[in-house]
Length: 324
Ligand SMILES: NC(=O)c1ccc[n+]([C@@H]2O[C@H](COP(=O)([O-])OP(=O)(O)OC[C@H]3O[C@@H](n4cnc5c(N)ncnc54)[C@H](OP(=O)(O)O)[C@@H]3O)[C@@H](O)[C@H]2O)c1
Image (cartoon, rainbow, N blue to C red; front, side, top):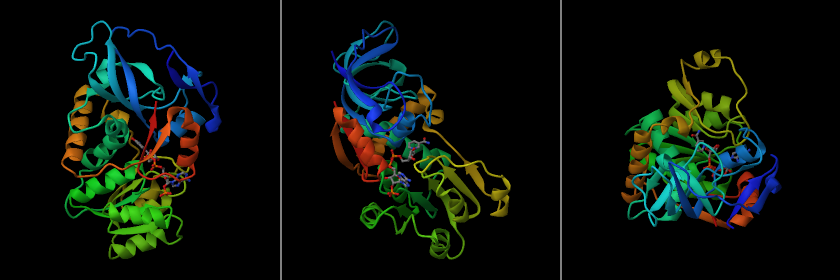
């Protein structure tokens, strides 16, 4: 029987158990896939700890790639052997074999490997919507990117740079600063410096940046608002340090009529046409070398707990895959 990581309660990395699970035959509208690579994401930590609640017992993981083994009734467009990938607004990707709704699967084009697709479906499609839809990054924009050497961060930084933006990165260490610079950040600041907003203002001749992409949340939210120009856009899209506490909307007024959004990928790809367009444009950007995908860590699926420990301890850079 195939194996999967299962949760019987929420908590630390050790609540993840490697167990035999029978996926069963694909039902109507489903496709049975054998997974070859699974993307590790910070959202998996929110799911595991219960920050984003889910029913128990449950699975972990939201993106993966593999081969079609069988198709259920009423499925069109897929056949055994097809290379496919998915991102789901639901957990269970940490497994060897599973059934996935056909309407959420995409076929992989030549030139995009299974490993690459396994980390692009969530991290790449997130970078895509953040810089092409939440705000359409263009020549002359100055943007501030937190966790610039991380999974989403390295893709977003390189892609935004290729669109002509000036990118100021924020990272947790000097080693990560070197990586962020190599990815195209013109300036890199350490997250723990007390005068971060003043440093950003200095780099922008006292004006502030056009957009902040903040995935850190609680620890950085107010500082990020201070980094923006009047009528700039605050994109708070993650909670690596904890969720942003509630705030008075007057904080936006005080800083010059700021715009604020708290987006999620799943709202941007809920419609099939949006999922297809996002995947197509992200794969095309990879092939056009707008960004180089850095898969810097690989773990066996059974070692998912170690992968989570390293991610939470800020030890990883770029993307990470779990290998079934
Ligand atoms: N809303 C959405 O649609 C969406 C979609 C995908 C991802 N996200 C968010 O984007 C962020 C990046 O995701 P990812 O999977 O690519 O992870 P990641 O960036 O590879 O890892 C998280 C990084 O956050 C930084 N960090 C800063 N303070 C931290 C703290 N107190 N604890 C842990 N990490 C801290 C660390 O980088 P430094 O050491 O360099 O600071 C760490 O490496 C996450 O917040 C995730 O939730 C949001």
